[in-house]
Image 1 (cartoon, rainbow, N blue to C red):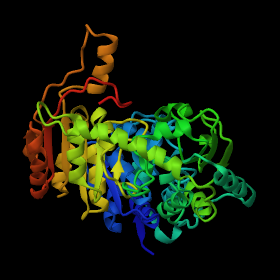
Image 2: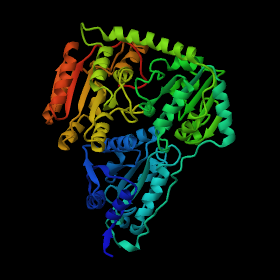
Image 3: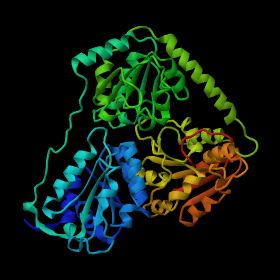
Image 4: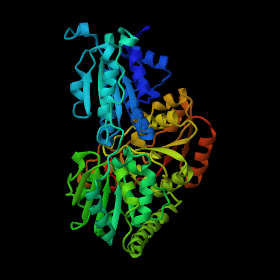
Length: 544
């Protein structure tokens, strides 16, 4: 057989893993791998900053369930990905960062962009290592993928010197790994299953709560399993972060604004892939005497911050399927109606605020208009702080990955990179971005990438001219010394126009929906820049 270079071997291994797209900012230390991807028919989507490439690979993994791949050249190319990889780490996204590295013959000699990259990634990856032999490159890819999909999943880093990538090797001298990672999601054993079913069937006020870990279920149909479970149990259900979309947005038992109310009154909580972190008060928002059944594929999450009455390491989707045919129990109509009633009351308050049409546009009005425009047939990337937390309560998400939010790391700058990946994966699906004006500044130049790759998306900025979340805190702590909290109302729409997209500035509520329609009709990447009223509150853990 003919000789191939290491880059081709890498690309062949990636193709075998199911990868059809990689995200990259080009550089000399990764050219053999880029060339290999071209040979193997893997799409190469280039961006303007390596952080954006890492974010795009994260979104690719979330949308497809497959390995997201980012290629970054040595030194500053690799270091530029750190924030994106950290965000993927906290979101449990199976992302592979392939980093270029200096020549092996120049090791410890001060070669161009020489550094020991893997040491930098040990705290934010499930595995990080360096490939030393061209003939073993597919083995290294298999090792990285095995770690990336272990437990819930997470990012990994493979460091590959330029001469290892460029080295030539006989194709039949390469060992091509197969069957190198598990593909059978584990459920509950019979005894534990019986205990869980008994407890759920006796519960008077059960709550089902699915979190990020549920999105990474390896079960064949986790959304169908969750629907079956909720319909059988007839209990209120809540979806957090990446689990959003596992039920239709209008499911009658799906809560939106009442999670704390339900958890505070529950007698049994079924937690499927949930993190008891700051978003849930570290588990303290759950009634102290509630019986918590926690199911997670990641052992370290079970019993973290909140004791588990029954704690099991298993695939949450597989467990939901096991439970769907076995639960039911007592009549819980009154319990469900109690929570639904609170939900309606809170929604009515939001509806009143969303009806305000005088003065600068109210954030709730912005959120309602944007949600109604995008409907539930749009993949929406959420990039910001207060404006995103407000809009997320209105967005209609009916599919996993329909709302791409930063996750618990609270990273700003994900908007355009997430949208870029969504268009690469589903070119015929409408894709939108909801920005805060602060977050737009991080990766706004990626509108250039959207234009170059002919990816029409509709972005909308809630522009209050400030880092609103932080300004609220600053005002409370140091009211006489407000600094670094104001941005001014900037014309981000004109920047997008200058890059070849469509831009429009909106100051009146009645003009918002027509502007969004015109942006959609433009057929190019578009940004609607909306002047909204500054909100005097603290409503988000994100600072943007």
